[in-house]
Length: 197
Image 1 (tube, one colour):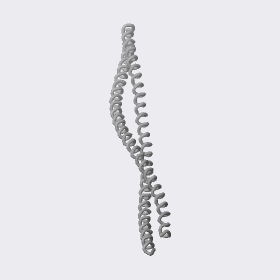
Image 2 (cartoon, one colour):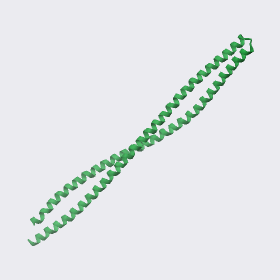
Image 3 (cartoon, helix red, strand yellow):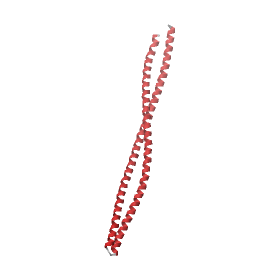
Image 4 (cartoon, one colour):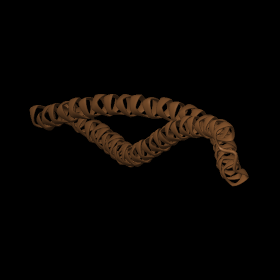
């Protein structure tokens, strides 16, 4: 009977030591899970800010591209109008040259034709400059599109990593719950052994 008592006390002490170690391990795992959750929340906030900046950059690039396209259409219309005006002026000058003997009328129509021709040349030059600017803007938009694609890929990768962390945390939480149940069951069983001995 005395030997049984000593054995019971030894088993009880062993159970207490094991319980303390399990509780410490569970607490450490819980702290790690909490730290991982905090880091995940920070990462999610950073991804949200990054997504907002990305959307703003995309909208800005699209607006600039639409403005360039509208300006190009306007220049094209101006070029057509200038060509038509120059053609009318040349026709008018030719007609007046034949119709009027007065040098004053001829000079006036010639001046009008020269003005229309100069206006056409100016419009052509503006069209050329705009095409050059449009080409530069097109390259910039293409570069921005490439950058946006890279950022979107990175964003998707981070989202997938965050989902993986969430799944891992859920598994850790389930393991912690199972460990607590085991600790409670073990603590209850260990408390009854000394009395029975």
